[in-house]
Length: 557
Ligand code: GLC
Image 1 (cartoon, rainbow, N blue to C red):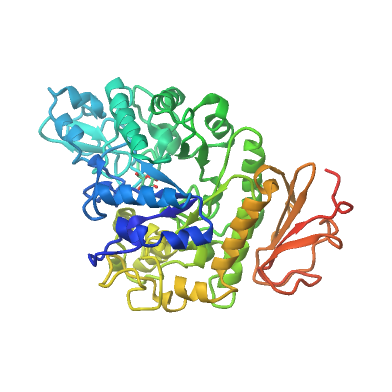
Image 2: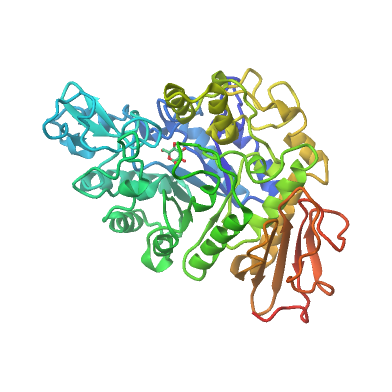
């Protein structure tokens, strides 16, 4: 699965913004890489408060990205090449500009109940600080309630005030959303990536949760996985025909744990197909500290978490394998070593480790050439609403500008949103004019053209990994066994079926390592893939290898 963030992929008409014809123009590139499915971040009509995750019309393309006919062309061209299209589907909230919400502003309208409108807290004066119906914080800063002076009530927005939460308790809301999705299926899309889907059911009555130091409840668990979540998702599955038509149903789930994801992605339950989870990406964050407080992660923890998900969903559900997307920093800067010496090697080794696991690997645009974090050094360079809100609040709370900049440089969503670096020209081949967000300064070296011209590039390593997965069923079906769980530099595991066993061994450090004791003998094994041309007795810095073990070397498990 290859994720395209359309705004930053390719600008075909010189308006500084990526668009659908730009995507169509690059399909050969994706086909050559070996991509099976494209996940397209939202292209619907939107005021773009949250870059399209605030939808004002689910059934039309925003003029920024083109026209419906361009989307039809994309679907047709993908299908011609044997690829599928997964559309992003934001169902927890709409934009405030959506006609449903505009109508809903009128308390007498039947649409009033389509959103969560609530009066002020008991014995408070509506519109004054603290009068909000609950103490919930928005994920993007501030409170989760916006006051509407006209009706004297508040509406709920778990994200920005421009993204009011839909009330899924109302059956008309569900029917309208399902009918809209059915029309997309008829149009030819092959599935959906459901945005923050486990927020659609809330526990009623909406009530205060545990308060943090600022008096607000930041505990996502209070608003996630409400009691009717499974019922709603089953109804959606049935009504849209997700299981029946074998459509891809990728659920992004906030704060989901293994037992829940196991149920949600169990095909017998006819709910969702794959789970996008977060536990492995929360290891470099201090849960008790402020937003984006930085904490070095430990490889042993990452291995433990990934192994728990591998084993936890095995035989029942299905994992999304990812280290990067449009909400996360670049993985080579976060988990690898993005210095010139080790950038390409570490990007390859992260990929080897991830792609040989069980699940569906997701590549986020630019990850396959080892793009790095944005390297921005001033607040003005950041455009993302979450980043801007964070900076404003942190500065107001007394955090120094240099600390704010350090947090943004490590965690801002704009790190992954810089325009795709296609070539070394001034705007990276993305656009003929200055793009909406600055290109990464290192596009002069790190770009698609350079990657394609270098047989040793990160790109060709990804191609090999994809080819291996396509060739070897064990990568899809094999049992996972973590090796060396306590080693803080080596990530090693087995994938086994009755017939075949693969050994993956990866040095996740910028120092060479001895061949670890405790690994199976590889003297008669076949080396299928290596980041380094010479396989020596030890492991070079950021070296990774994939072996097929010989019949006599296979450890008894
Ligand atoms: C998801 C999206 C993110 C968006 C949020 C609100 O987490 O991936 O980009 O801001 O939902 O829709």
